[in-house]
Image 1 (cartoon, rainbow, N blue to C red):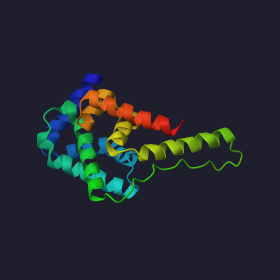
Image 2 (spheres, rainbow, N blue to C red):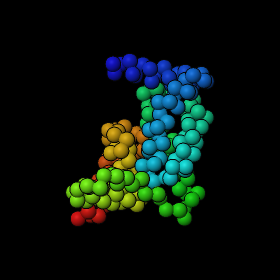
Image 3 (cartoon, one colour):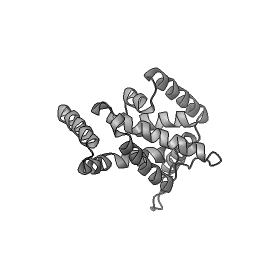
Length: 180
């Protein structure tokens, strides 16, 4: 199963390099939602996330010849997404990150107090993550929200694993201090 996935990823990369339209459609179908959720997770609004996701795929298509190894497709795409996001934040310095969407309160009027406390803590955690510096926020989102391993997330962020672990540690320390 794993071998078939690697072969299909390598094949997709080769087909993308060849300019095959169906490969581009497959590429977008497989990765669009993940990249959009990454953009939302690091604090962009819905509209900006959609725009930046599209920009990510345009940049990927434009630079597909730079991708040497099909195994690196996932990390390569996240690196482009991170660069697109970072460029957006530079151009829009005065704007604050948008809080990650709040969890909607259940319509059931018999909401238990434990559930309310849990929802409030979750919202506070999301707001705190959204307030982290960009590199630390990216680290938390890649590892915990995109469910990437340390190695995958480090490659996607374009840093060494030790650097990634250090950033993750700093981010978690900040989060812990906020919840003491």
